[in-house]
Amino acid sequence: MKNIEEALKLYQDEVATATWAFYAWKHIRNIGSNDRAVRQGLNRNAATWNVIAHSLQTTFFITIGRLFDINGDAFSVHALLRFCIRNIEQFDTQHIRERKLTDQMGVEPDWLAEYMEHVYEAKDEDFQCLKGEVSKHQKRYEEIYRPIRNKVMAHKEIASLSSVTQIFGRTNIGEIQDFLTVLEQIQNIIFDLAHNGKLKKIGDYPLREEHRIERDISSLLDRIKA
Image 1: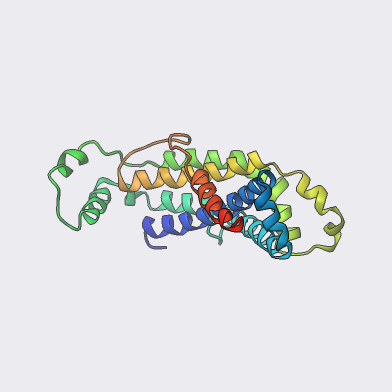
Image 2: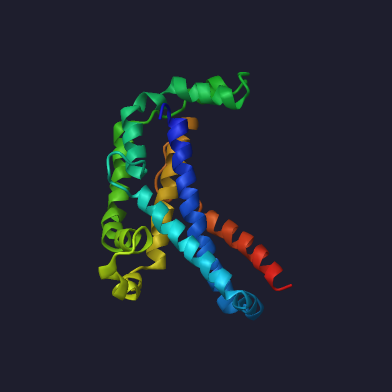
């Protein structure tokens, strides 16, 4: 990775994949449980639906595993934050100004000079703080979700086959949503630091992605009822 734009785009793609896979699975199940016509439509093609559901689960667990990977050679949320710290100069006013000019097709707008007087330059401790937020969820991921990724999804560990139901029984939908929320908030915070020179914190951004996915899934399932 050469610059923060490249690193952030890679991270955004990973978060989007995990988010869409999880919420698509969640809302197909929810809508199917509450809408008889949808449930009947899915049941008519149960084999296909089972494959889709398994694919969404696998995609989620593999992707969230990459995002929480602590291997130093892997790209993850940890790698992104380390990259930001090592390349802190990419968050200075000059780089922010260049990004603003790029957004304006190279033409300097009248407001830019005044805007630049108030931008915030990111500091190492800003990213250390984000690392602390990730660590709050890392332990739970390692205890509950990494075993599913490693022993069930990525590999079929023979010793674990008899306890798959028990392993999945320890998961919690609210907890998974917390994972996705903090990962998405981090991408928004880094984007604002790099492009707008603004420092925000976890929780400052509205959560819209689940509702967007739910609307998209609802539209798709409406066609099944036809």
